[in-house]
Length: 99
Image (cartoon, rainbow, N blue to C red; front, side, top):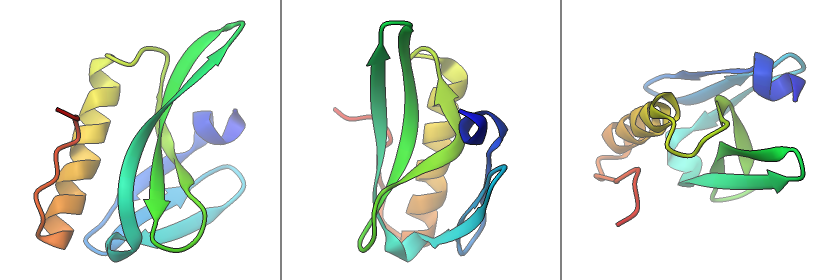
């Protein structure tokens, strides 16, 4: 939980830069296949986060994109902003919200 709570993601023209308490990583926009919302359910409650699915390599959780409620406006805005940058970089319009 330290990485989720202390992490940050910087969106640049080249890609996403993940910065956590323990590491730094860059993921180019061209390597991203999908950005998915994941739900986690435990006895203590539920929470949601975002994950980058790459063409090669394992999926990565996006630091700083974490919510206790799925319909949290701040969480939804983060998802929309990431999709906007990804769409602009790739030239393909993508909707952050499924139909």
